[in-house]
Length: 454
Ligand SMILES: *Cc1c(COP(=O)(O)O)cnc(C)c1O
Image 1 (tube, rainbow, N blue to C red):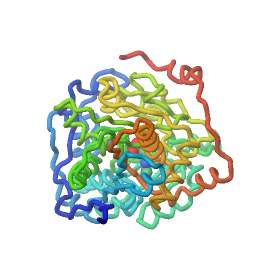
Image 2 (image 1 turned 90 degrees about the vertical axis):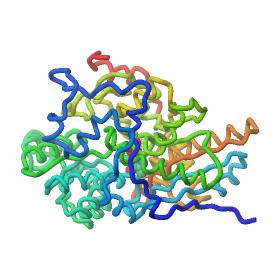
Image 3 (image 1 turned 90 degrees about the horizontal axis):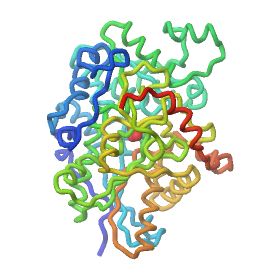
Image 4 (image 1 turned 180 degrees about the vertical axis):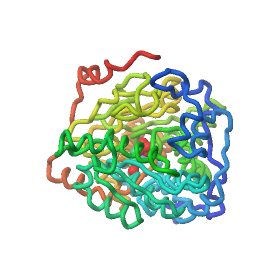
């Protein structure tokens, strides 16, 4: 009998609502607070920076379900529903009794899950009469997704791209330009903050912190302009729940239910998007499904960080967020090529960690590349180096199932493909990458300066 490999849903099954897990959480996440007053952030304080649509979603702790606008569902049709795939070839290679499934978000035109939120954020801006949006991008995936989303809804987009990435990742830049975005190497002469930095240090290669402050400055200075963010915040995780809502139906088609659900973890959006819709059942029924976030050993905020209020950015411009963090001044070692470099985790995931509703593992760099290559050679898709962390965690679970001789159903998120990240694979093949042991002293150093608010 031939076996079904891909579980496909018709367009009519694109979810009509996003799932807001905050409404169901036994303990709500602590609020974002204003760094000056230390008071919970109010809607009015978010409105100069974000669209009203997402600002309201950010603070919504009561509505379980939030309507997906028809215009957004229409754009989702370009690539959604995404396939759920049974990784038979990987199972065979591992000789495991485990059944391994992955949700393939790499089929989006930008190559990652980030478009799920980019389209929603662009839509709300358009609807509210905003004409221009800004953002920053480091590795380039968020900027790429937003470039297409801005074009889809007729907005002008300016992306501040960290200068060193602007030079080292020319294809991300060309993708953004192809979709019509203006890409500016940061620091730039187009903002006060950028001009000051360039004047003081003309050869500065930029940082995410600088790029964020340039993007926010432009948003605040330009009429009808707002800023957008691609991870960490609650509304971004909310938009990503289309992944898990589809996967739930597709697992039903496959006649199985996952024992363990895995996502790689940068700021938390793709993990949350897959996990939260399933977790609503665990919260209600107390079932034994495990939720596993896979982070790099060189940036281990969930496994080794502290739970404390911290800034979302290096420079300290954002509100204070209650998060598992390595400290906003933390920066992973230079030898780290696998992405997921962000210092903290979003407030929802951080509370779920506190309440032991989910777990985390850290994956050494070489193990993640080995897993990515094994996946490419069995299932054919070259994964994004970020996604390879989820694959590595799935392989560990499959090997455990083999040792224990038990059948286990594993579901992981393939958050993106790696076609624009081949320089990272090159570094691996050239032997330029190694594992990096982050010392506890180092973590203590970057977390020590955090004010003890919790
Ligand atoms: C941005 C990105 C990530 C990490 O971000 P999360 O918000 O943690 O999902 C992971 N995988 C891919 C492909 C990405 O582009």
